[in-house]
Length: 481
Image: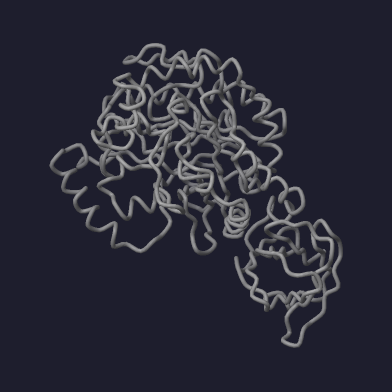
């Protein structure tokens, strides 16, 4: 949902309906970092926000993001630095480029696109440049510090063509804030993130030129920024031109320019000390990195709000604790497929999208353990997708049946959808207190057929769970025309 502030910020622009409707996107982190494929593990069930709250001074050394390998290997004593020395000796990060580019010969963008389309996703966002500065397209905008630091093959264009051929939208992620070929300050603590944003005007021009090239070449439906933007970058000018080329394009919220204080070593140390004191005491809440007034949607990471939001948002997460491929992470640390599906339903009920990441290996293969989770989403969406795609939040996001099963609600075209977060027993009663007023409307279990509904003794809508229902993590009941 666009609000008035956003409409005034870029005249005539609103959050595009396709993005409101899509609900599920696929994020792809793939690059030179996919070759070493290593990051330290966090305790089972924990992710970056947990580390940020519990041990902010160890953020860079223990960050579970394999795509940050180049940063972590430069922090003496970090698990990644030890792993690199034991495995590769003193070889520089740049040496991983050769095996990555050699592996491109076997990369199949059509296989990726088939797997993504089968999930029921509406869009794909590819990381075109991560913080290591390596580009996945042969740009005409040259890196002044590392000439030729880009793929020899147009990976961006090939995936865009494959994705669009299957009816999905295509978007680009570009690391606007960080580029370690311009500024290689090791990021150890939270405020170091913003101190490492290059302040050289040449970097602002470099970012602007790359973003415009991506728009001109690939017409992306999403432009996804990260870690802020360099001082001097004119976001408004870029977005006006972007929306002229792609009128139904959209962008996220991570465009803030860094404050001046973080550029001062003494001030940054003081702020990091304050963060180390305050963050462990804060209650758990969604990590929302940006609130830029020109953004269309917010991007909590590995987290979601407790209730529906009026503004549009998109939670982003890996299947494990990393986005890039982490061969060090065991299978049982990845999200359980049931939890993935039920979490996705929860996100949609609260006006969110889920941008679910895949991290292909150094040869461009999506691992079997990630494929199995994509299939779980696809199996669910094939039956119950109508309860999620093209819906909007109902008057309440969640509830519970009289028998104790959690429910998430959506609505579309005059119908209300009650999505049960579990499977009742055959013949068991399912009572929905929140829907008693709708008892005169037709009731249908998607993928199965009409259900007889009555008003129970407590005034709740009552149905009996039928036999022959697919064994899926969640089940959607439609009440309405």
